[in-house]
Image (cartoon, rainbow, N blue to C red):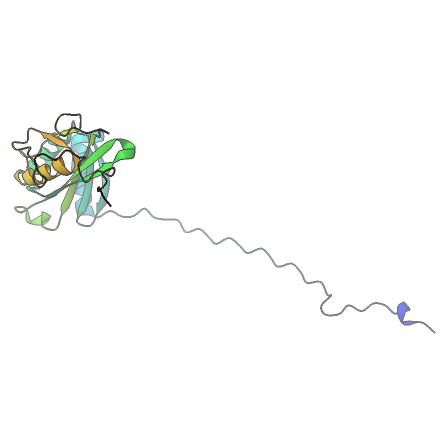
Length: 200
């Protein structure tokens, strides 16, 4: 008579080996198509590149918006071409951005057209940069750019505001006076990132 220990072992359902699951297949990569740029806006940026080559950089092209960057040495010529050949006839605004890590201040012109109906919805931003002095003496240091006042009359007050708020002096501007601050303002230009409001 055999004992229980001599009986063949019977695997319980839990002990049955289960075949390993196959590794999941990597998802098939779909080939990304480059974004198609709007044809009208691209035709405008292409004209700038055709005229100025690597003197301009196309920052962005999207519906109703084009962004162009250029150096301070070329900004006046590029602005004249934009006015005379591309028919953007006025500046809607002038603004500035402080980049202390780059030791530069960027000035951005937003340009539009009253006279060319196909440009009614278009805004072309033209940006250039000036050197940034750590201890600025507005108007008497290297933070200067050529004015676009003779190209776009409407930059007159915008450039004055950038002058007093960021310390960018515009060579050739007919009226480089402060616009909002007192004439005896002796602190940093208040839109620079290292400006601190006293007492707060």
